[in-house]
Length: 350
Image (tube, rainbow, N blue to C red; front, side, top):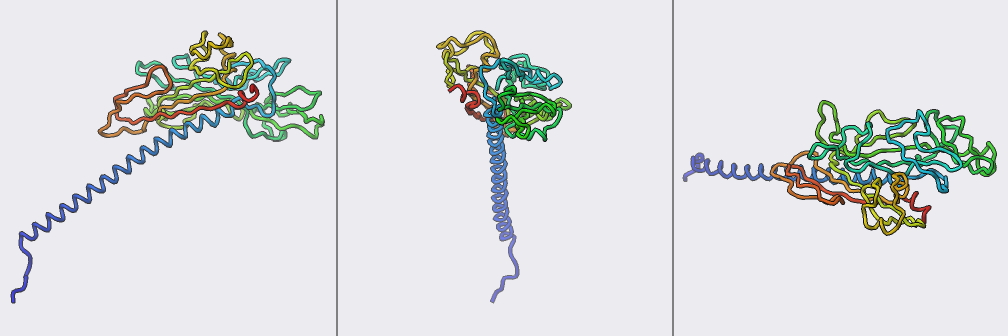
């Protein structure tokens, strides 16, 4: 009987060939899975950034004009700069008087407007001109604090229900928080509401030191806890563009329903046909800002990293007269859009 004493060279070559073929298949599969996982991670991150940015803006906009239990009766409105601190308390826009002065719940700077100095490294367009829009939201903190727990230096609004007192006090001195309840006793001192204001915009960079990292980022200039933040705060990376359209209630007898949406309430003449149906459009910027009852928020969200073998030839509708793009680069983009009703403004008009 003949027994096999080994294997031939041909058999070795065949075995090696089969092994190499299988190894190539395994490596290809692993590379494909890895690439798919990377693509999914990038896509999920981009979607998450867009949704998070929309949520941040929506949640704050919903609070616009919230002044605790204070009920306004034909106040005078002001539109203070988002860059002021409380060194002069009236600069924040709230002043008690026979006709109280209140800050407009929302305001903004349209595309191409001259921006205040605290808006650092704003987005620029292809012509290297500043093209960032700014959305300003003002209200008091939705969580009140007992007057005894207030902090000197933080501006508070305190509402009185006592007939012998003023309607409210706006102060950054704790000892001045003496507004009483309906029984007009010091045993029923009312809570205080800390004032807040935020200016949202798109910056060209997240880390802007040493020329910047080139990642477009949603940032905010925040006035809270009695001080203006020394530097803008980065909120969400990859937010490349923001366009806000403002819904104005211009009826002679306001009903809280937007009659038209415009990109620039500061225009001398109404830029939308819906605004000309009534005669309430004003050449006074503050008057128009006080009539804003809704926001339409449009965001263009870009991937943080570029993709291989991808060229963005698409255009994107952000609600402007012309579409954005094509950008002809390796970044993927998506548009996120939402509408927000300003209930603290629209509600009392109904």
